[in-house]
Length: 187
Image (tube, rainbow, N blue to C red; front, side, top):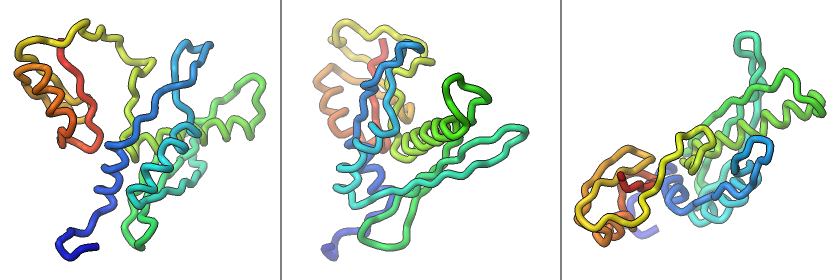
């Protein structure tokens, strides 16, 4: 590392990954009529960006009792691969279903673990929900606006007014508003 370079923090490395990773919801659930991404999709998509940022992660599960129910608590720990010390952790919970036809108890725990791990990774790397099946559908504008218009970052809520589409495109190429910007033009 050059003397003029400031030491990187774990958060800067995570932000680098957040800016570079896009994980589409490429699987379809016919029963629920929605698209989703799997835990395996997320892990596969994170490997190369994490390597480029000099970080890696490991995950662990713990079964915890909250009230009268059991939950799987998944924790993801992000760390530098070439230097000791700084670590960032995020946890997510998933409850085991009381019953699921065709699944034994071990499979129920495994499904809860996979779900909790998926959302722990999404939290750590700010992987957005894209079109969440629970979200209210909004119609996208048919054409880009010609004159001044407003747009906001869905990740952090920042709003800006733009003179035209060229101004918007130049800004969104490197916005710097948050680690994982996702811009939407307001209709």
